[in-house]
Length: 555
Image 1 (cartoon, rainbow, N blue to C red):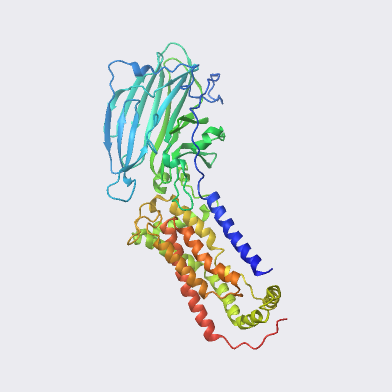
Image 2 (image 1 turned 120 degrees about the horizontal axis):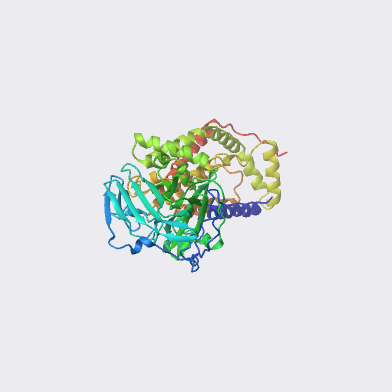
């Protein structure tokens, strides 16, 4: 194979690498959502194992929406504010829910006193951040506009009550934990009528769609992750972007362990405690709001009998400890990938461990880099052996180049024959690259999804390891380091095509790294500098130990 073909193959592999990166690691632009989903009522069977979905009919003209509590006289809207070290929230009796929750330890940017992150509603304003709908004998009744009476109001405990219809009384109890991002909700539904009713219930969460969500970044634009619906069903995490809502997305049937909305670093999710959901419904309230509805089975509720549901509502960061404390595999909301997660999770553990002793995640990344290079020592020795052999045989390779300077095909053929006969592997210099590729992608996942590294500074101008270098200093330094590393790497050939490739690769990689996280740039820069020092030492040792090569036959 001639060198022009090799050059084209190398370019093709580079383009393929970039294609795979942007196809599978950069999200697609989010299409505009469709008009509100219109559902129709289904036949209700008085059975606790009824598999038919209880759909919200608030957008259907065929079913009446009767929020009786909203016209209850003498009850005014009331808002209470509650503080803890973790959050500041607003509790309202309309509709007996948390109207807004702000995270006190997390802000929108690292600049100055930026606003706190809001997780209720998540992503932006929403009409129904957390509401309930009852299906009474086929009629849907939403409490979206209902004003509840405040039965009890303490600092961390609220009890709301209302008569949602002539025969249905609803009591909500909210229990807050000042040391957790999860609140406990108990909903008691009582049949106050004289006849049995077929009762279904569903709870609804909303996620906002912003203008930023409609563009997912690109090669010269930092990546942006929009709010998306997410759920853990049958021990597997599922995600749906706002654009998928118009495609009638398929929702797996099975054990729904939790569901809600997430963004890059934050999560709003409901987790069942008492009463299991039988189905999940996705829809759009309007062009700027997605909705996820969690449907309980239909039950026959006799007069004077209560039906009690209990769930946790998590509204906080994707902190692995906070998520694990809630249980129900909520930590699987941290999207590290399937096979990449096998590498990424030990990375997170090491970074957190190192951070306990040196409270700087930039230093922790440097220590991780050193650890990885030490673990790759066997590959380094194999690479060094290949390089020494290359150095020893370079004089004869240069003779071949001079001898066949006017016949590149003959030169290529003779060179390959010579290298095979002397067991020289031209790919020996790539041995160290292959095991580092999964580490590269896994660290990208860690930096992109770990709340621990969000807004974490390193030193000097690097104020956020999870964001790109604002002055592009690290990518440029990385390109320079790669250039010197290539200069120190022996090549079996020095034709013009390979020389051009050697010059292009550092430039291409620099451009590729411009908008990737500064922490990832730091990792690769330190690893490359380590490689430069290592290759210099190996090359210096090889030169001092090398014996003058006698003329070797090319056969």
